[in-house]
Length: 611
Image 1 (tube, rainbow, N blue to C red):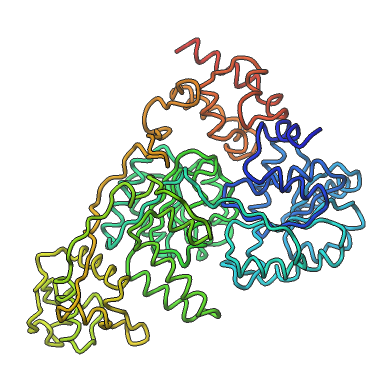
Image 2 (cartoon, rainbow, N blue to C red; image 1 turned 120 degrees about the vertical axis):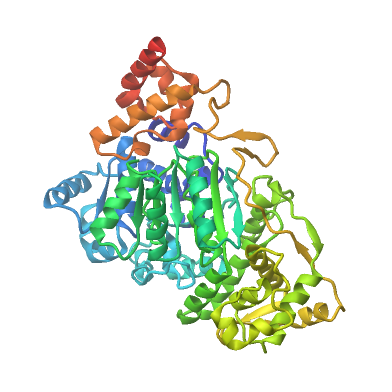
């Protein structure tokens, strides 16, 4: 069979995504490769399909047991013989694996880097290796955002098996990290495939200056509007995950919590509850997500600022993996910046971590199309604005903010440059705190000079002044504010400061805009959804989703492994009533057609008959 025939038979698709076919042919010719594709871009298929076509077994190095299990479950659900070698294996599983390897029936073997190095001599005796795939390859590099020491020995694969092709895959890696991956893997001449980092189905939004109460209210409003959808809320600390989850529980929203302070069993329960749709929302630290290939996550909220654009991009990429419209929202607060700067200063890579944090702050404060800003960071350019981010939907209104800069810097200078941002805000708003009174700052001429401006707006204006270079935070001197030379020019009336009106707390529209500016209706929110050649029957979609959940529970698979949301939407639109028509649905290969065709088509016929 051709690669395209394998694609339809096992994965149910008729066309490849950009670069997939080229990468597959490259590996089939026994050449090494480094693949950079965004989360949800189809990296796994690039090695899974060649593994089916080549003689022997493909060895896939993966960092997490949960990630391996997820991949193996999806492959088996498509009729592919796959297994994972890890510490959780029973003796019976090990014997089955050995028999499958020796017989040549096993096509993909997933293994952790530690286990691979330990078992490599035994593995190579029992089987013919078709290729090595190193997933999450940024873990190899000390410059990557998730460096792992055990990955550094992966170069031994090419040294031990010089004729076996090696493919390293990652969703995020800058040029320094890419070069380091090639060096560490001993594949310096490997071809680098980099697809577009653009994910036009993701809406992008930033909310600046919200305090904790305002953030919680905004999160509640957002989650309530997405009541039928699955979503992830990322928090910087364990305490925040617990706080946000408790708030949602008080409003009767089923939610799980995931952070490093929980036991391994508690984390596993939380992850399985989310993966299997027993809860719709998970509040988590950044430790959550790498092991999840859940295709129907409809939104990602960052309750706190991420450490870098690489982290941010990988985390928002966990939404909309099926290509359907999905939302992201990032809260930006200068207190997060201060905390993250302390983390960066205490890290072993202070310089590069501070630089990455600065780029993240610039993104959050940007007043130009956010998608263009992201693409520019990853070395891409776009000729037009996206129309699907908060800046494009609500273009900023600029005004002469020189007086605001003068108010702020006057207060900073009169305190002897000994005040933090919070203290300066208290002075400007006229807050009679014991701290200000003790320092005598309530007697300053600038006390309460900005009382007509809300505190949240002052925080937003200060963030802009920091970005424009009018003021700086002395992180090494108790986070005191200091005027900069540009700010001094404005303070004494020698220059003008053009600023942007703060964002209002507008509700995100239920109809998003595509890059072309056309309305894109949101599934499960807007009644009947217009799809390709017909109208989706929402009631049928919900009926099929219940059927999918029942089948998943019977088989011990997550629902999205049985059938993706995208396939369900097409079923609810085309309403096939024969197994042959069922097999033409995108994402349904030969194995799923035989396994699920009758039960789904019978259910569709019965539903339509009784409605």
